[in-house]
Length: 221
Image (cartoon, helix red, strand yellow):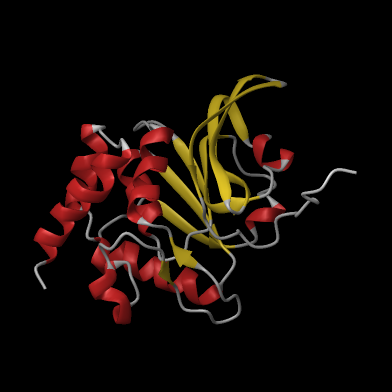
């Protein structure tokens, strides 16, 4: 398989048409070896427009998000070189690697021990050393850490918990996919003051749930 051609096609046919036009994001996607972050059995699927299942172990249903969704989230966050980033849901470590190239420091939480080990191996192989992978439940927050310039949820939630918003610096932003199937919204929340926030929802998508986040009822009575 010609990985370079497949990577080029992914960028031109999936990612650009999804309004990812930031030249820094596109350049990073062109050099980051996505095929090294997928499970070996799925290597041929590394550049397809789909979610890739990750080893189930204790928590089945975990995936790598589709490339265009990862790229759009990365573009929305606009992470800068001086910033500290928190990611919830490490998975294979690919999104953490992309964030690591743009940020000063990335802390990423993963609830599945086997995926923590997989992500650490993948990041080391990719030469990304400013990412710390921690075993932990992102839904429980990260007491004593932060504040962060940016927080990325690499999966969907019914709503964003206040405990995560509290970890943002003023001027910081959180990106999450929020809502219920069949339509969820890519949601960017910016902390504009100590107790004030601005929320934008620029595009629709669907993503699997992050584990252990609360599920309020969809129905109002």
